[in-house]
Length: 258
Image 1: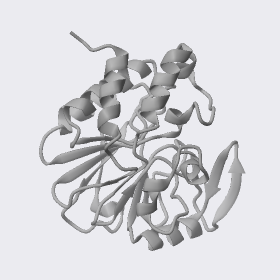
Image 2 (image 1 turned 90 degrees about the vertical axis):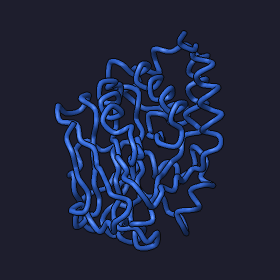
Image 3 (image 1 turned 90 degrees about the horizontal axis):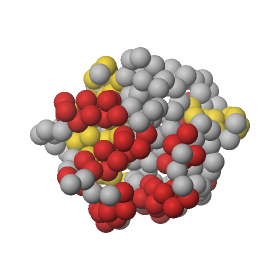
């Protein structure tokens, strides 16, 4: 018998409470990075069908709800799979998981829920990690890089604070510049900011989602933006990376259509 929503959220919360804000990926095997799925249950199921096997770890980059038609089914499926495979699936936070902290549109998933369920989902989403990192040069998150002294300080980032806002709401803009301003509540960052933070964190490529009209490759092919939902485009993309070799730019990973 399928568990009810409260039991699902309670059990998922028990696992997520043990995870840090910064997920350190192992130095062996491969990782699959998944962009916004936004209610595209078929995309989530297809990815797990293909890659929920050794030697893969699967990192979802946030935005599981809103826009698409199957938001509840999509996030509930992913929570169930997280329960079954806690060491192989990681669910990072996107801005749509933070609707109760910073409102957004469209919010068709959230607006369909009674207050009690909004609170339940909001509580489990607040436990989602914010970033994933690998020793071979990868950093992955939803939006833009935070301004911290080290990546490890992500473990101290609180939901709603300025660095949370950069991580889940920030945009990158092709070209030079640091902080370029605010567009509709989304901070805009240029190549100077990107290069400064990547050098500080000693990472070579950033894998992100969030920004559907950004170039798929920016900043000398070191910033990769992907989407994995047909709520945006008919083509859904993921990144597959070998965790055992040095990753210097996008030429060292596989950008795959599903």
